Length: 186
Length: 75
Image (cartoon, rainbow over all chains, first blue to last red; front, side, top):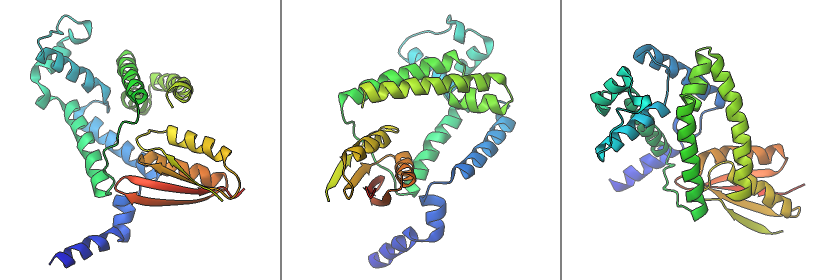
């Protein structure tokens, strides 16, 4: 019985459809088409463009409220719609569900491709780089009312000029960031 | 003909590619550089870059989520 099980997974590993659809990465073109299709679906269903970082701000507010803080006087959370979102809770928040989907979808994809691995932290420099980078990313994403998904992908797909301007800004930011990375954090 | 290992585990793009480029500059013709990576985007862009440079490249999956990119500096 054991021997038959082992042979099945060995055969699956070299099956051409497994390799083509689950193991190997998709081409850039395939990925772009799929992203465009799913962004249309999410726009049609939730009536909002795809966004990721907006949900993080709300998660942060809930965490802060969880430890006794209050964000209701903050300008960002004072509007009626923001208050409604906060009060409805995470299970009623469509943006949160979409982010859960992304996290679990990515996990499923990497497990199916036998590519799951916990990566170790190599040095304290990595921790600093990740923390500073993450804080800047979060801060910038709220200033711009979006990240590479909401402001760039969603913006350009919605034929908004702001999407293109965001793209130019992001490009130069990435150039500066890469030079800093190579110089101080590599 | 040396074989040099370059450990890029735990490093996110573009670090493995930049380290590979710098290391290859130090090697002589005929040397082989083995880059150990665990980042799936590096698994795409390191071999891609090495092939456009004209080097012989082979990618081996050594474990779940771990790859060795074997680059022969042949020119």
